[in-house]
Image (tube, rainbow, N blue to C red; front, side):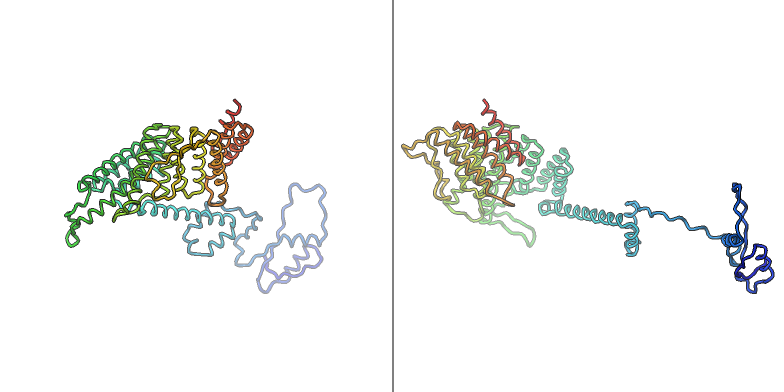
Length: 512
């Protein structure tokens, strides 16, 4: 091959071009031009087209390839790939690249990822942030729940058992393991010589009873509280006669502490301990007795007599201590007693017990006292419903006078009988019941917004049922039917199955 300088080709044939190129050699071998002829295609048409000299030269120029002398041995570069649509990266690969060290320490990698796959990168960032938030919340819950102040006051072994008991009772939901660790915690309290009547030890037993009640084991929950209450009653009997024989009692003359911190217990310190311990144990006993009264009235036990006895004991001791303090004053170390809300709840529970025994004349005074002590408007409607039921079932005689003038001396005497000559007919009791039911409905409907609780909605449904029953007793069947139907609608709107059942039973009585 002879190098030559490329020049503009004249309008002649291919042989004349080659002859002129051979006659004028190239001075500088910058490029070489190679003319290649392709073989004719096997499937050529039968009548080939005859090209002009100009068309033949253009075809030859299109078939020419340029090479530099130093790259003549290397093959020509491959043709560029055809354009294809960029495929999206899977989400797991995007997450892996986000978690790599190159992404963490080089911001341009994240920018490139977001530019290449914006949707997948955004979703991956959201998943990472949500996962980090869940992990942070779990760590916060772990340290704030299992290492809270309620555990730090126990010895380490007791606290460990309590954490496991609470875990298996609230999260792991393993009944056998939860019961095992509750029992182990109580045994460890005894081994650590903790006061069995302290709030810490009694609190474990109350928690065990509450857990059994939550699991639906009402007899087991009542048994635990019954054992604790029996021990407390023995302690209260001993504190009145021989307080120095109480377990863990710091009797006068006892040395507490060691070395420089050692000190001797005085008579005044012992008396303060006795008074504070008596208040604490008596208050806990009253509360447990009220709870026992509620549990014993449950359908799984249904022992109304035992329930009534527990409620009588709680009410008598709560009112007796309240009246003693009102008369003698509060002594040093005694601390505060049950508040009005707690005493009102005790009276209301006893009133409900009298209702179950169909002693409505004795239930009325207790409901009136509970009404005066209650400051929750939704619960006021509940007590008013109880008053409506008690009046509607009251025997045909005047009720007791039950509203004293002041709270301080209202428990020092029994309810006063009605004045001589005062008579109440059946119609009077029905009218009083209707007034209290309407009051309950009005109070339950007044509250709006955040102050309104589900108890208000349930009180509305119960008041409508009571008004339907009262209308049925009065002989007004149309009014009774309207109120029962309205009670069903309100109960359905608030998911209150008991209200639906009572209203449907009222409609059945109308059809009889």
